[in-house]
Image (cartoon, rainbow, N blue to C red; front, side, top):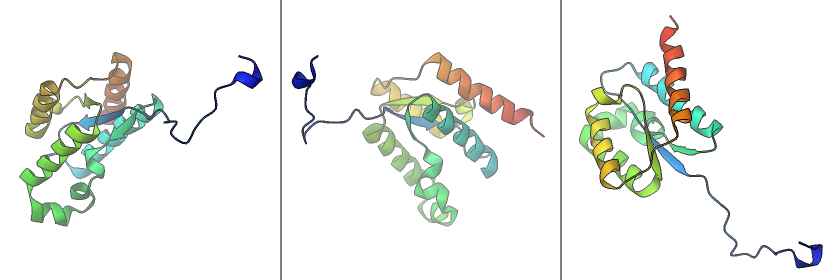
Length: 137
């Protein structure tokens, strides 16, 4: 296109936003450091592949454990489901999601809303990162 006919950006021109992917996996019953590292790996892999992420370990209940003790499991899960439904474009499951009651509920909700997953390449990168983490002493 000649320079004189280039399309101008207007104030209403919307930037393309990254698709946000909700990270789902087991937390209850695992040591805090372990599940925090697993979610951090998934977060980094998603960012490397150009996705935004919704990491439930970064919400208020995980940041302030004393607040979790006050609010409890049910309200925390309800808040996570609200994030999944209203903010996420898709979902990715960590390898241990099957053992988690909350992740199974998130799976049912994502199926109900026909949420997309991520590519096999991204899923394998997350699984490999977590497998490497588990090999470390």
